[in-house]
Image (cartoon, rainbow, N blue to C red):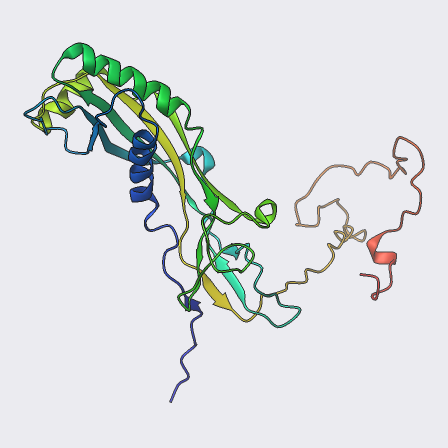
Length: 278
């Protein structure tokens, strides 16, 4: 029977719920800071919802998700920043791919029975969301293959942790007001949703989605040899040639070049060092 190579243990997707959490964070941030009137506005994601009474509504609708190519990384695996052990003490090593940087675009609008009240609510929404420099700021969660959720220090995950916060890898979700939709684009969007057209704002939230972690017993060390010099061309030929065999013209005389600047102190080539010092 042939032996089957054992694959490393794989954990769940660590960032599988971050998009929904961003939407909930925007709604919760608006509700927690509302202090204009006694009646708190209703948070709604369905653009065609129209209340029948004097209820005020703030619409928060995510309409587009794109990848941020300016912050795109290579997909090679790298060591995850988790302090749970290392190769020296025999602890497990965790590897993951770099996070996927995404831009989430939200349409924010307001509705009230009177147009002036809706404009007042929209103005308050602009100022409130302007205070959200970091919509989410918490320790990064890493889901291990055994089902445990830990932070970068290997402790059980706690989003409200304060001890050792300076040493933790933090998760940050920024929010910015952008001009992403034109008026015709907004009209088309409201028409597709069968909703009445209302003045709207567009916001961009930038998130990083973490994939699964892979557990390994240790990393792989690669020792590369020193670069060797190119062998000189043969001198027994009636013509001059390069090491690759191409015929070339006359070879200029060798001249010893002295590097500019002061003489280096304690400088030795790697080839002169004993093997123990390499």
